[in-house]
Image (tube, rainbow, N blue to C red; front, top):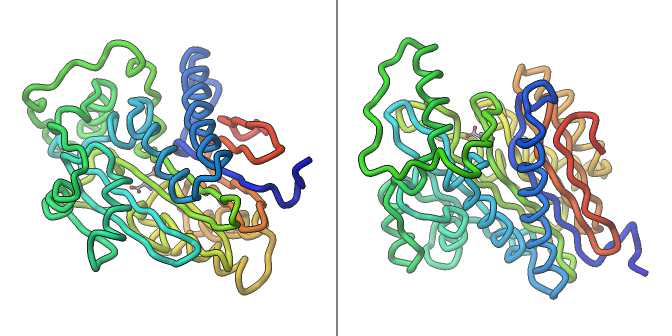
Length: 331
Ligand code: ASP
């Protein structure tokens, strides 16, 4: 029997936090999101079960979420006010504190892999814009036409958002394939946000965290949120914990949420849940921000905390069943 306190491996995933309530989600949408979270978490669990590293599990799980048009990351990403998809991602290895991040990529199919490639393929931590895509290309990472990321639902959300702001609606990108059909019709616009993230603890006791997003809908001027910022949207240390965030990025940057939770665990010996709750329910709420976090510690503790009506989430560990949550009152 696996020790329930110290499972051999553990993984927690999120698919964004926001205005996600029973009144807003149809039964079909809810089922699609639960199913997608479950597929992704099981894929990550398979990596860990086979003895794979926390970094590999994080990347593999995020690939699935980036490819799924339901989530605001990779395909299905939110649009900028100019009608583009500019993607951000970061990943961190808790054993070595090595980290990589990209901001504003537009042609790299899996931004999380570009972030990871930054670790070994460059002397840097964070690359931005065209340079980040050029780097990803040089690393042999799959490139796509920007229209690959297009989904009708997110485009309509952009149009609505721009109308609210009194801003002009840009021309639809040329050459888009209409992905209004199939799964993409089930996209739920959870407010202006949405993001995906994964934290994992492997059989060696190492933790890792990764986050990938299209950022906030109708963002302007090259806006970058917390997701690609190490310490804000993502952090991992074997001395504390691994954290991935989702929510109003500006607030997460100002609080350094991911590092703050790690610091409370590392230096104040708070339990993972107490640290996550303190930063989200107290600090973030007091500042007026909304969103949530997922966390895992080297001893296998898992936690999530959010101050929105819902957060798509999943957790699974050696000897513990898969748990999926959508609304506040789910498990
Ligand atoms: N945190 C992301 C950002 O601000 C969006 C989100 O997680 O909802 O870009």
